[in-house]
Image (cartoon, rainbow, N blue to C red):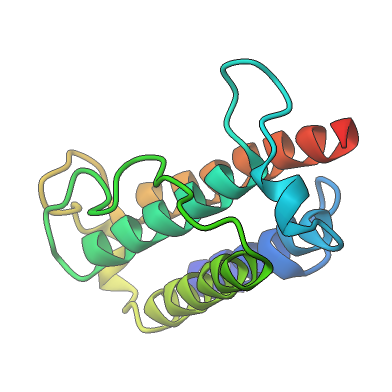
Length: 152
């Protein structure tokens, strides 16, 4: 398997497939209601909803970086605020998470072999390193969400 195939498979698995580490993010989020997602279950901790928005926002940053844009933080902020806690807004947040992840998968699929070792614009690391970081970021926050869900 090429690095592109391996990374694409790993990104799919951690989001909505058979992740080696445990349930995928989609499995963890299954059945979480808007009310549950918006709840602040621990002092000084983000809600499930805030974490979902954070993952989406940063996957968009990673997409911009893969496209050659020197971006440091998400336009909507590191942890975008939840302003509407309706069921519809929660479904939109989940749809955006899926959409952003699908765009990331498409961007990875479009990378040439030579691009994997290119330095990311404005950073001192390669595209390959960035993609490994994306996986770690996704898994880290999925674990946080899994723990918060257990508190519900």
